[in-house]
Image (cartoon, rainbow, N blue to C red; front, top):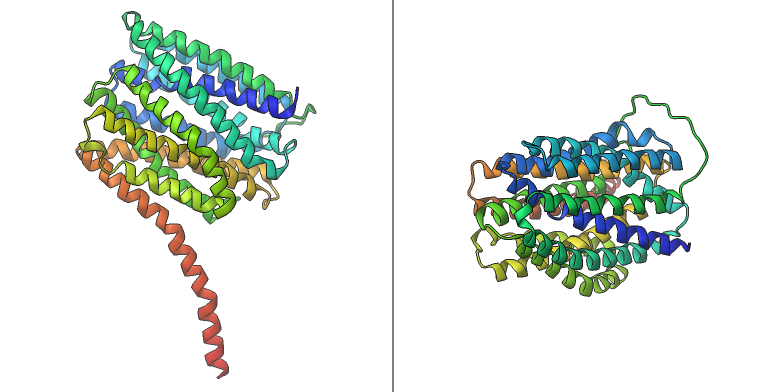
Length: 397
């Protein structure tokens, strides 16, 4: 099978998993009676366990087919347990527990996959591959969200079994995609020796800054679920329209964003996406019109898609500067997931003492502040050499 075909098929299958398993998972958790705190935990615990996996386990495992497949099997078992946990009398704690197990395993495959791809793909080809992967994902998520949203509402009489059947489709898709990438992994056997390793040694200032931006981005996810499901009582189909709209607009604008990356640089496009998402949530708590929410969600979806492509491109470019690539990939994912975990917990804390509209305003202002920290630190650094030169001149004079 052609290399790009294998990569694009994996992207298609993984997005089938995302839309059939995860798109409505938090809606399911909310409809099962979860509290606002539990909804925040559902956004925080998975990335927290991803971060723990990256800090203490992932970086120590060799990049081999055996390790990649073993973590994939654990991930698959956790997926199945999550699907069937929805049928239990008190399912939310079990869903969160198996989601955490899945998070540990998914980070092993998630950190190893870029290292595997770097052995086969030229660095200059990554922006196009990531962009095409994103377009494939957007098309599948757009069509799939609409279809699954309609299906869930049509079979709402069998709740929660209608969600279970959808999640089982995602289990099959992720297993097939994992098998495709496993064929590219090195076949040699290497010993596994687990010991204490200090994480975050390969992090630079840009990585920390991107993680800080992730804190702000992650803060809105639980609030969207609470606002859409518990406050506005939107149906699955209405929530699916948010994904559909975001998907259509993203498909049209991602090629434009890719050309902007080539012309203006990845960092500027990344910054535009971050600021665009921050400004979009400012009026969110005041908006009750479904059609206006649809417009805002479409814009947020576009910014998220551009942000993801830009982040992945910067990660792959920065990897070439690090001798320990696997440690860098692990540290990068560690910081990003830690940011996601902190952001969701912060949102849970905000909603406990602020009204919904106040939470969105605080989040928007925080995200703008987080973004500006990088520019201010760069400007401070740029002034340091000139100040030193002036001091030297005055001393000589």
